[in-house]
Picture (cartoon, rainbow over the protein chains, first blue to last red):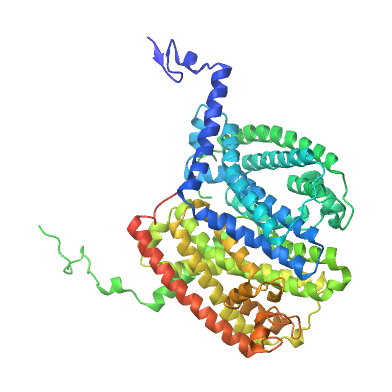
Length: 294
Length: 316
């Protein structure tokens, strides 16, 4: 008797059907990445109200901080600090709301058990979420950066474009890596996850020096540089985008901060994989994968 | 046998009481409101122990104030001390706006997308607006806690000058009542929008509050803005509410509305609005927003019912 299962060709047994080649596993996981990214990207086109709420209104929030500096008659470079910070918050909010808290949402909606039952690595779901979310947040960040720069006359002074782009990419990789770690952590939690997403906004903005040089915070700023990718990425990008120091001298040069971001990316990705497996096992044991509305 | 609505007699039967479909009016509304407040508070607070909940409640507004204080220190240093009080009060009060706006909108999203109870609440005898207002009130209580602690931290830790005896309590009470009503009205508009949109609308209240932040004089005087934007600010009840609270708590402090170059001073010739002007302006702008909110919500509710949006879940 032959069994037709999974791979679309007759096999001698279910075991043989489930024995996939590496290429097939990779292709399947890539399809999972695309599959999870798809609703996010398509969803943007289906409901254009996000353009107003996710782009125009956050631009106005960034503008508020620009006007605080204007009221203080601060040097124009500080306006640039705010604009850069406003652009990067798009990615941070995406990491917190659409990565970290997502598995918790999926659990509440009943999708989580389907993810675990499907023949794929859950990491590919997280990658898919990251890629889908990146499209939306990159649009928002680009609009904030371009429009605010034009409206408020921000002048960038970049000497090392290559390093700036590298730091930006590394900052995104580290932030989304952290999002994956948090997503696996949130797998165990109920409403704590939802509330933690709130605490990860303003307090993190403060210690990351969102609108000011992080060195102004002293040791707290140094600690943030070592642990929060938003702080590290922002500080490095500001040094590279606005040549010449303003305010307190930075703790580290951009190259060293790029090194920290590389280390963060590696650590977060490995940690996410480890935690996802460990917490999945624990969640299975404790029967939490299907528990909703806690 | 045909079904009948006539009363049934006998021990095993029941009497149909047509008055039960009418309800008891205000008494029922009050009971719905009270139940919604208690439910909202439990949802907000019982996920952790009280200490952690307290830290969570104050972390956001205190951090928001600290961001502004550090910005001020980096630029102005010690000379920016007067302005420090201005930004601390503004960002503390903004905690009310954030929680007031988000409370109602998130109640819709919570009940529709997460707990999937909105359809049951909707078909229950409780009025949906009353339930949403109750849930929003619970969140405003959390916001009030954050605002109070931020003010205390501002006075005790950040050195903001404050004289308890100089506070104009009647004005403070009046502007708080009128201001909170206006905030809840804006929240109702957001709830109406969230009835029409999808799960990702979680961030909408924050985005709207962020936009209002620009035109409310919360952390910088309106005079910094272009005249056209100042005009929008003057039509916004939050602007008058903040100015009223500032005037009541810190008499003689920097005005967020008047001052050299401000539209208000250019139009009226006055350096800054006094208490009666603020109260009248808050009353008028608040009434307009409240009426608008009632109209928008009823329209949204009807549309949601027509299109089957009340029990829709939109996870993406």
